[in-house]
Image 1 (cartoon, rainbow, N blue to C red):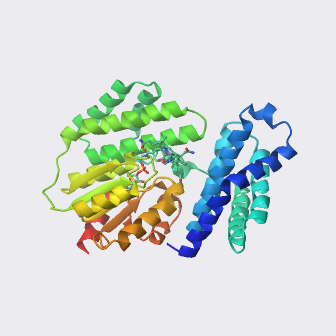
Image 2: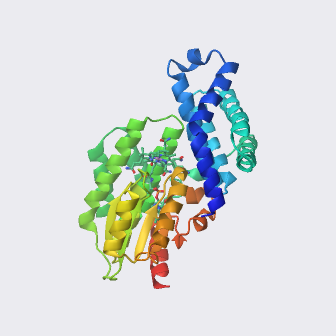
Image 3: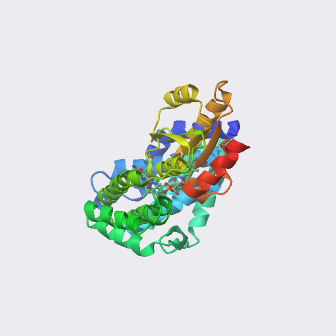
Length: 353
Ligand code: B12
C-alpha cells in the first residue's frame, strides 16, 4: 500500500468524530426543523451518517480511489431517496462536511480529500442505472432464484431449503447452486433492503437460511481427486460477511484442496499465528465492504513482513473489487477473482506459478 496515502487516511479517521459533530451543527443551523422531520434521535443518526461518510472518505484516500467515495455517496443517496430523506439534506450535510474538512485537515491531505468529495458531489448530478446490479436476469436458474426468494420473503425456511434440495435432485451441481441461485438471491436481498422494500430482519433471515442450506448441501459434495494443497479462508478482521467466502472455500474443497474455513472477523494476531502453524499454500481473503480495504492492505503487509509466512500466496475477492477496477493490486495480493468459480482457476494458477 502507498504509505503516504495510508497516513493521510489515518489523519481523516482521527478527526472523524469532531468533524461529524461540527458538520451536524452547521447542517442543523440551516434547518431548525431537523427534530420535527427526523425525530428525537435525529442528531445521533446524522452524526452516524456523517461518520460513515468520513470513514469511507478515509478509505478512498488510502486507496487513491475517488470512485470508492463517489460510489458510497451514490449508494447513500439512493438509500435516502427510498426512505423519504430529502436530497437537500444529504447535499447540505455533504457540503457542510466539506467546509469543516477544509478548516480541519492539514495540507496536503485537505486538497486530496476535498477533490474526492467534489468529484463525488459532481457524480451525483448524473443519474445512474443500477440494472447491472441485478444478477437474477442473467442467471441460468432464474425461476428457482425467484421461488427461493419468495420463500425467504414469506419467512418459510423449510420451503426455501426444499427448493434447493429439489435443484440438487434434478442434478444441478453445488457450484451452480451457489453461483446461479444463492448468490443472485443474496444480491437481490441486498438490493431490496437498499430500496427500502425489506427490513434488516428479512435480510438476516435470508442470510441465515442461505447458510443453513449451504450446510445441507455438504453430504452432496463430491470432491475431485486430492491436490495435496492447503488453503485457509477468512474475511478481513472486522468484516462480518461470510457467505461469499464460504462459497469460495467450499468450491476449493470440491476441487480437491484441503481447506480450513475460519469464517468472518478473525483477529489479525490469531490469523498470523494460525498461518505460521499451518503454512497454507494459499490464503483466501474476503473483503466485502470497502470500509475494510485499508485493514486488508495492512494485514497483507504484516504477512509479507513475516519471515515464516511472507511468501504465502494471497488471493482476494469481494464486492468492492467488482465496483472499482485494479483496486486489488494496491493491497499487495497475488490475485483477485470476482466469483467463486473464477477463484478456483486463479488459485490453482497462482499456487503453481
Ligand atoms: C448479507 C449482507 C450483510 C450481512 C452479512 C451476513 C453474513 N453472515 O455474511 C450483514 C448484515 C452482517 C451486513 C453488514 C454490512 N454490510 Co452487507 N451485505 C450483505 C449482502 C446483502 C449479501 C452478501 C452476500 O451474502 N452475498 C452473496 C455472496 C455469494 O456474494 P459475494 O459476497 O459478493 O461473494 C462472491 C464474490 O464477491 C466472490 N468472493 C467473495 N469473497 C471472496 C474471497 C476471495 C478470496 C475470492 C477470490 C472471491 C470472493 O465470490 C463469491 C461467490 O461468487 C450484500 C449485497 C451483495 N450484493 O452482495 C451486502 C453488502 C456486501 N454489504 C454492504 C455494506 C455497506 C454493509 C455494511 C457496512 C452496512 C452498514 N452500514 O452497516 C455492514 C458492514 C458490517 C461489517 N463490519 O462487515 C455493501 C458493501 C458495499 C461496498 N462497496 O463497500 C453490500 C455490497 C451492499 C451494497 N450494495 O452496498 N451485510
